[in-house]
Amino acid sequence: MTEHRSFRRSFSSLAEIFAFTADFFARHGVDAGLLPTVDFTLEELFTNMVKYSPAGDVHVRIDMATAPGGVEVALTDYDVERFDVTQAPDANINLPLEQCRPGGLGLHLIRRLVDSMDYEYSSDERRSRITFRKTTAGRRDPGTVAAAGGGNARD
Amino acid sequence: MLAIDYGADGTVVIAGRLDAAQSPVAQSFLDRVDGIVTLDCADLEYVSSAGLGVLLKTQKRLQASSGKLRLVSVNRHLRDIFQYSGFDQIFEIEPAR
Image (cartoon, rainbow over all chains, first blue to last red; front, side, top):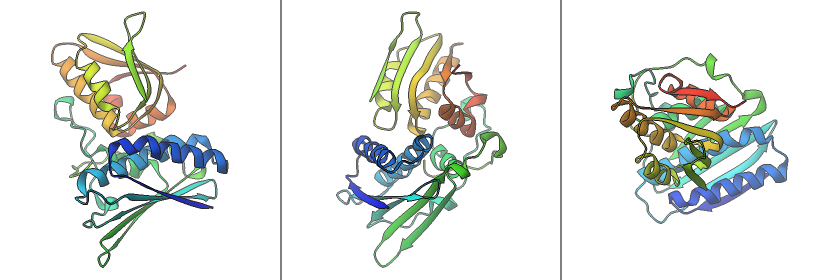
């Protein structure tokens, strides 16, 4: 079962996006324990699209589908440059407080929270599509994930 | 939506969703606190990286003047986020019971 909606490129669309995910989870009986991670990942990816894509009036499309034990979600953005979120470097989370900065944490976190994430780009259409999956089987213990160094150009 | 205000015992109580749209509300309030501040997160359902930025900025400012931000009654989802982001090394965090 797949459903989709399009959202205006604005932080104020977040409330509508969260309402869409909550409604989808409730109607399709998806484990509510997955919802915070799905919302978190959607917010990070959507706000990145809002901040870094110049096309002001083009809406972002979100597709949600049920998957065994969870959901698969896709965000499609139009008239944008290529930026592969799966290849962005990790944030350095081991810096002392005075050197810490919030930028870069978003992508660092979502790559650890979801089961999988894929990126597709169509040069002809200048279309970017990010697909991620979150299931109960894919839950991981944060303590088992090693911290990595580096810095990010985006959140 | 997000609500943030002082509780009866002097702690700061935050409730709702600390996302990119609501972060300015939280930042505006936390810019006015001083000293050692306890943030009661019992009813904080959700935090995004924008919200983490608010907490980080506040912690930096408070620690520069010998204060700090303590996070109490933190739920499992938030603890995961804090741990993945390294915030468990920056903040004193007390889990929800």
